[in-house]
Image (cartoon, rainbow, N blue to C red):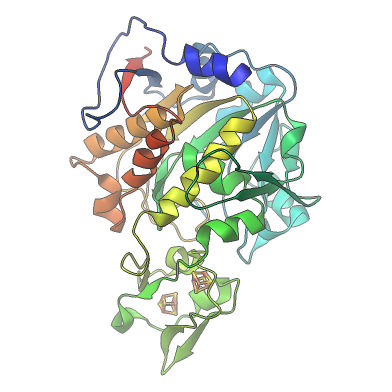
Length: 367
Ligand code: SF4
Ligand code: SF4
């Protein structure tokens, strides 16, 4: 019932200070969702935008966040969430990753989060005591009959999805959809989403044999032959870690091997199921925007200036608005396609098709 109320509220008419409509969606109905926007990225403004959405999330709240990979410099400053965490009494929630590194296991994951400054609220690694799965029966999904998450996922009454909007090697961009899809998936769920996405050695001559990708491959699928990298396709689980870890951009997603949008559709289906289970509201922070995600220890420097904070009850609208603001700031139609060769727009097309929200939005700038 709560989900229905939030969905209806997202489409109420309103008076905006500033508005912008995305015109790429001619086949959608006339619904327009509100996305609140503020330019100054401050802790007080994160809370202000959350309150502006008008949601009244009750009970035990989780804030889905990314603590940043060890060595990553682009993850969001934890202080930004302090007033929000204090006001809502929420818990930071995350899941363990597939990758080799501190975020793979709960004790080292929590220790890294604290090292990165997430010290002022409780932390719950949702799969620290195992995983559960949800059936997708009756949801008419293409890829999954079940989705897997941490066993603590049902322990919360509602979630605030707090996302760093930036690039991602396989998804084009990572925002709220990616944060939900991979971020709530247990390692088994992450593997299911990545499966069969074997990357390619696109620039073999540029490989200097540094071995960084080999150290970070969770499947032992990489090795050097004549000082150049090779992938054992039988072992590869398609996690894309090597794409992020290669400083010379030798390894890239193979967009010819599988239908380009399959990975994006898998992400969306995972996100869709989680949105059906709990009430949620979405906050995207557009800062430190590089072509790589916060899972990368070697994420490149940002390619554009910081833009601001967005908040909405509509996950598709907030992602479209975030995408458009980054494109505008980068003087192009698709900044992530330009920077990393992958467009993430398939996420939004499919999410809209599943009726998760609308790509039509009004951007309401708060002064
Ligand atoms: S080769 Fe790359 S994509 Fe495949 S499992 Fe290893 S790190 Fe992941
Ligand atoms: S990280 Fe890149 S440069 Fe280093 S061995 Fe792997 S593919 Fe080659």
